[in-house]
Figure 1 (cartoon, rainbow, N blue to C red):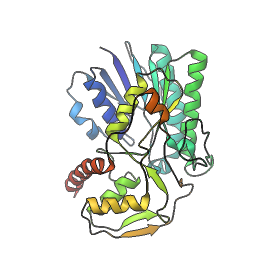
Figure 2: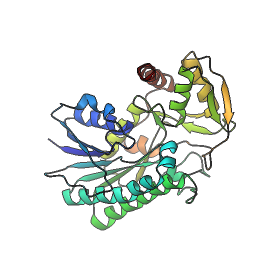
Figure 3: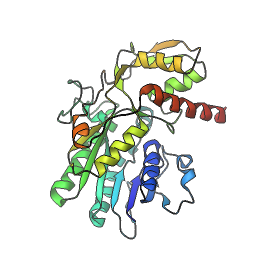
Figure 4: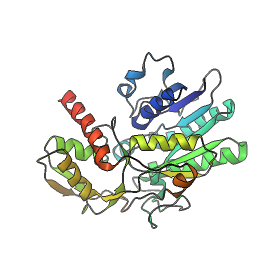
Length: 314
C-alpha cells in the first residue's frame, strides 16, 4: 500500500486531498498544526485504518518512520485575512516548512508536490496568466508575505529537483471554493455567502470590476491528482478559466441564496489583483484535465454546506 504525507491536511484543500487518496487506496498521513486548519475537517476520517493524523508544525524537523512514497506540501495560511494576521508564520512555512518537507522527500526518495498559487503572478500585466509569466509582485507590500513565500518555495523545489534529482511537481492553484471553507475565511465566496445567508449587506471591494476565475474543489483535487501522477516537473496552472467580476459574483450569490441583501462598496485592499484567469493549456493537453463543475452547480453544493455551518453556529 503506497503511503502519502499531506502537510496542511486538516485545511480546506488538504482535507479533500486526504479523502481522495484514501479512496485511491493510499495510506494517508495528515500533518497539521491547526493554526488555520481544523480537526473538524478530518473528524470523519478518524478510525479509518488508512488514515493517521499528526499534529505538528512543519517548520520544525519532520520525522516519520518507514517508507514514504509521496509528499504533498499544502501547509500554509492561504487567505488574505490569515496571512495578514500571521505574516511571520506564513513566511516561515513557505521557506522553513518547504525546506523541511523537501528534506524528508529526499531522505525517503518520495515524489514531492508543492502547493503554489496564482498569487505568484501578483497583479498581472498579461492576461490570462501562463506558466511562463514571471509575475508582477510587490515584495514589500502587505500581500508580499504570501506571494514571496510561495515564489521562494517554488525556487527551492526546483533547486532540489535540479541539484538533488528529486522528483518534484508544482501546482499553481487559482481561486477555489467549496465545502469546508471557513465562514470567516476572508475570501470573496465565503464572505459573500455568509453575508447573503444572514441577509446582511454584501461587501464588494473597489468598484467590483476586478475579476477572478473560481474553481470548484472537486475539479481542483482531480487536477492535482493527475499532476502528481504525471511526469511534469515545471509549474502547472490548475483552475477554472471561467472569469467573472466580483460584482457579478456577488449578484449571483445573492440570487442563488434568495437573499434580501444589498451590495455595498468598500475600499480596495492594497495590491489586490485587478484580473485573475489561468491559461490551462498545459493541464488540458498534458494532463487531459478540464474543469467540469459549473459555477451554478458548485455554488449550490457550497451554499448547502454554509447553511449547515451557519445554523450550527447560530
